[in-house]
Amino acid sequence: MHAFRSHKCNELSAANVGDTVRLSGWVHRVRDHGGILFIDLRDHYGITQILADEDSPVFRELEKVRSEWVIRIDGIVMARAPELVNSNLPTGEVEIFIRDMEVLGASEELPLPVFGEQDYPEETRLKYRFLDLRREGIHNRMMMRSNVVSSIRKRMEGIGFNEFQTPIITASSPEGARDFLVPSRMHPGKFYALPQAPQQFKQMMMVSGFDKYFQIAPCFRDEDPRADRSPTDFYQLDMEMSFVTQQDIFDTIEPIITGIFEEFGDKIVNTDIPQISYKDAAQWYGSDKPDLRNPIKMQVVSEHFAGSGFKIFASILEQDGTEVRAIPAPKGGSRKFCDRMNKFAQQEGLPGMGYIFWREKTADAVAQELGIKVKEAQAMLKSGEVEGGMEAAGPLAKNIGPWRTEAIRQQLGLNVGDAAFFLGGKPKSFEAVAGRARSIIGKELGLTDQKSFKFCWIVDFPIFEKDETTGKIDFEHNPFSMPQGGMDALNGDPLKVLGYQYDLACNGYELISGAIRNHKLDMMYKAFGIAGYGKDEVEKRFGGMVKAFKYGAPPHGGCAAGIDRIVMLLADEENIREVIMFPMNQRAEDLMMEAPGEATNEQLRELGLRIIPQD
Picture 1 (cartoon, rainbow, N blue to C red):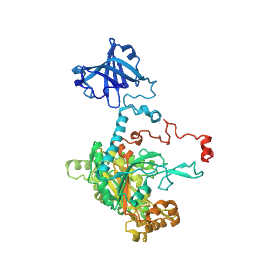
Picture 2: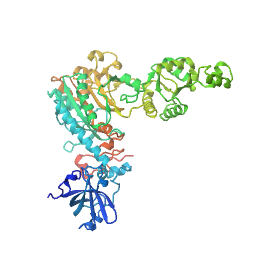
Picture 3: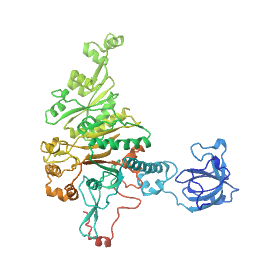
Picture 4: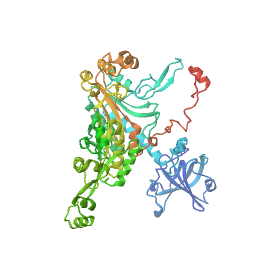
């Protein structure tokens, strides 16, 4: 018999009754029933129940065993009584009567429980991550991650892509985030960098004639942490193709991503993926990664407030580049809900959020309208002599009057019991808050479909933006994107130049970002020149790519999909650390390995570095 096991802890069934077997694993749980001990033995694959009574030769030894000890047991497979069968376990029909035992690894008292899924402080979980990973939920999430990556590889290879590895130590390259710099011992005073992405390398692969590349690539960015982003490193499905259009990229990657979500998710997946312009996404959803499970679509309602009695919006609209947008809220027509959303806007740093809600016309309103007493109005409403209809309520409705409120209601398609919220100003000043308000409204009113994955492409990103303070033109999005309209577009108004750049969003998260690349040097120099970077600066920063493009570069494009974020969505988690094996905490610290740590004086001397104390 094998030194440690004849079977795994998920393999035994009624067919094995009477067999002598050997199992090894962790003591998941111990139950003492007075003269009979039950132990749930756990390994990577599952759980098997072990039992011993006082006739067992190792009963006294087994009494000493505690949770999370690693043991080897020998025993006889026995059938459970029918009423004791555990249908939740693959091994639930049997149990092992123990004959022999060996302690392979004793455990000290646990700093956090492994049995069950109790909430525990994240700092403790990360410090003892090796224990946290023994818990069933997170163990299963790590297995899902492994299987997702394996499936992606098979799918990419199945459509003719080849996997190539790119360098981990490379040159510093400004790509929108801070680099992690690596000092060179052999070249004192000089630094390598960990790659933010394989962007330049994969483009040069296309120049080298490799038609279809992919890689499950590690990327390193010194970023501030968020719930959906690791502060140090992450993995992405990186891909690039030659001689392709934007639609070719979509047609290639869509079946890969939707196939993964259909294989590993438990929700409905939309495979007919809409393409929404960046401009429309900002206007309708207040986000370039909209959650389409929420049906609410914001609308511009400036015309109804221009010159109105609501002086705040009326005066705002007299300024250039301003507008008023409405967030429809079906079923949100109560003053309590409206006040709560107004408070939300104030907490977000805005003065507030105007609102109108529509309700059945009250007897007070009928009495005022007809010049009669309230009791008479009540009687007329009850008898049907007067139709109740609806009325618009709220301070904003009183300021703009019934004709304008009715026009707004009709434009938004609202009715009795509904509401609308309003924000005004230059769109960039309130769009983000409007987008968050839309999400809250959708969730609180039960409008957001929780049983689906809804994808959409965001396209037509502007390449340039203008700094409102300095008036300087700079890149708003990926500077390496091919401009729509080519050189002619770059010779016109830079703020109107759109790029062949695209993101794939799902349920409010960006999953993919990519572009058709600007592979023509004259256009690249021109684009960077508009943003204030001279030819010499471009060649200094991106010398490798500039050099490669001088020797015959094909049209090419690609994208990258975030592995961590994909698994986070599939696992229905809101925190990305729940799907990363050994994540950093919110302060970019590895509590388990105690990193970052201090370098020794010898290491610093070898690298020619000196630490300057921070004030």
